[in-house]
Amino acid sequence: MLSLVTGLGDVTAHAQNVLRISAIPDESPTELQRKFSKVASYLEKQVGMKVEYTPVTDYAAVVEALAAKKVDLAWLGGFTFVQARLRTGNAIPIAQRAEDEKFTSKFIANTASGIKGLADLKGKNFTFGSVSSTSGHLMPRFYLLENKINPEKDFKRIAYSGAHDATALQVESGKVEAGVLNASVWDKLAGEKKVDLKKVAVIWTTPPYYDYNWTVRGDLNPALVNKLTAAFLKLDPKKPADKELLDLQRASRFVATKLGNYKGIEAAARSAGLLK
Image (cartoon, rainbow, N blue to C red; front, side):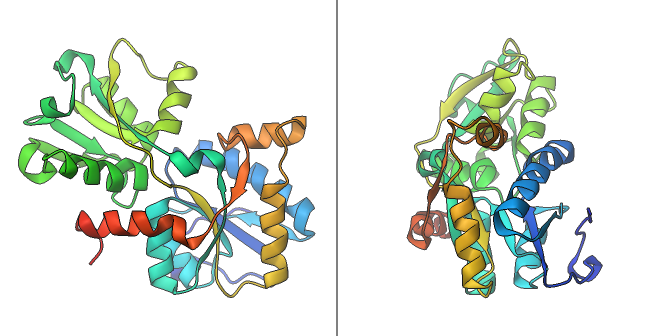
């Protein structure tokens, strides 16, 4: 069963024997469906109950769905997790990819623009991803400010593409001269030749930071939380079926995570003026 969250009032109540999962819409809907329907199938076998993946229209909808108990488990970016924790008071991060311990963002530019580094971005059209994206907005903005570049003052125009793959395509087409996206999506697009490297080049990579995680709502049954955590941690890249699932998530493996890992994200968000 598949339902689309457009607002909390649109979500139909589910029976208690169904685990409802969701994810921030940081890529195209078809790619998200491909990834998370496989996660749902895997978790069904691990926890012994029906699992439904519910796509959402934007990042804020995932946070609100968790707060309203319409979603039990969600794949969140670091910033979205901080928002969910502040909104609910008890959201719990249970697992992250090993890659999320040292995540980065890539600043990219259309090669015809003449942009070679961050300083060249001044006076240019630039796109972030989603406003609530850790790797597509928050951390890139934080590092721009660290490098004495104020997007509102120094860029000619600021846009928000809504998703990482959309950012790459907008830069490639010349709709904007430069943008930023998460390193994982960039590597996938470049590796699969879904972006023309003659038209788009990486001009700068951020320092590492913590990013994505799987988060449960704080009042979920502890026994179920333990099962879900174990299900992610037991995925073994040496087993073909597990490796297929890990590859879809662009993960070498999943590791345990904790609330303290995201204090830096919260501090960066407050520093950048994105949290009051």
